Image 1 (cartoon, rainbow, N blue to C red):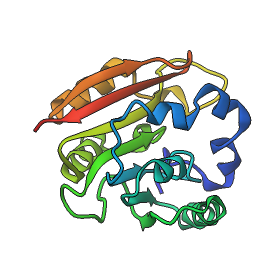
Image 2 (cartoon, rainbow, N blue to C red):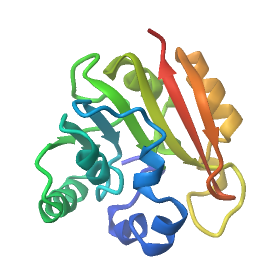
Image 3 (cartoon, rainbow, N blue to C red):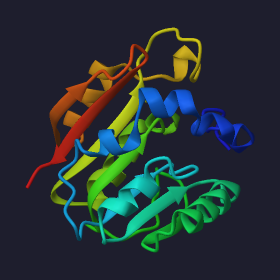
Image 4 (cartoon, rainbow, N blue to C red):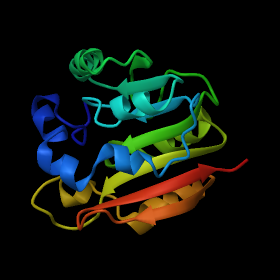
Length: 191
């Protein structure tokens, strides 16, 4: 396992009241033009912070990708508790996602791209999986010292990530800074 990968033993950090207050998933997902039948891929789905609210917005399939089987097991319990039936669990790494081309209208990449090695390979996979005109919602840690989050040398600055998305064939259609420590990029795959 890469030293950059999130340790599943710390999963309580993924879904806590402070994070929900600062980064409310339902409000943030409203940044995507999600339609009733859209398919969505949540990469690094963890405990379902975004996958479960996304599954309540669409009747399409929400593919929840995580490298850790124990995370997928927790996610499955939470999905059952939430009463949603359109989540499909996918074990795998972002650099080589075991799903077919042009499968989804939207990709959610929440606090995970800083773990991808190499980053361009992960962005190529996102591009491959998106249908033409599809969007990627990316929430990341800004490259500055904060009390929480990954080490500074693991982080990707917002300008650097925007350039990487552009190099991978995306257009940045929105940029937000919901907290002092986080930024959001919404990137669209060319038609």
